[in-house]
Image (cartoon, rainbow, N blue to C red; front, top):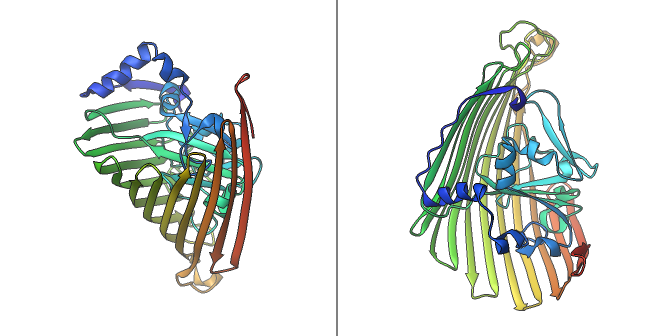
Length: 414
């Protein structure tokens, strides 16, 4: 869309010194020390570690990368990552899947600020409606990570982090438009007021695309609000909402929207981060997300509108203990329950009885433990995880990994 878009207008309102510094950074030279600093990642070990010491293959996409290339969807940001294959079945809004190292899409765990967001009972994630609004960083871990994140991380992990609220509050507004009645409006704001911090992003995309009944409408919003009474404690909550309406052209040439797929999702996830001294960290996340789907197909077929509902409750607790400068013990508990239901009636009772709403659920309870040894340029990781599923019992997973950095060549072996 961007290649053929004609920009109508771009309005940027900056009310903060922090936003002004962000603009100045584009035009000026970065501080030498900051430019050479090694990025800190979380996803490979579930605690902070320099990227060049990671015991797994990791790529990082920053907000600067997203802004420089003007990327609007997360799937487009992932297309350039080694080891990932992004497949989109049609125009904007159609099913978009990501495959890591050739494995199935449901074998990649997708997280947002530590919250698993893979969809439904199948476990795959559809990136079609996921925008880059308020995304500060994306970490991609390639290779099995089931010890830390469960069985859906067999191929790897894609972890999205919202922007941090810092500095004087500011706001950025933008709007653009182009061919096929394409219009997009976006808003972002972040800042810190005394002990409170926030970051929010929202956007709206409307496009008719090239074919009849191929329209796409997507509204998305994401916010992170936090309170830090001191340097040891932060209480925050993540909020997301999206509503999309996608037309399926199918074999119908009538421009009337007679084949549509409607999806509405929202999520709320309170976080508590507590540090005890310099040697013990606690992280607690409770999340609840709700998704509704309506597939209204061509009424000349055999099947009428299909309705689906998904509800998920999750609890994630993690603590990192540092009994020595060279040792980190990471342990935690995870609980998840997914309720799913579907109604798929026939257009006419002549084809069969009208079904009632059918529902099912899955439940997972897990505990994990990992030891990380860090001596000079050598890191060794050993961990295990026990998952219990209500449908097929217990599953034990273990993993050993390591890395060694060669200073002379700035090369990391893992």
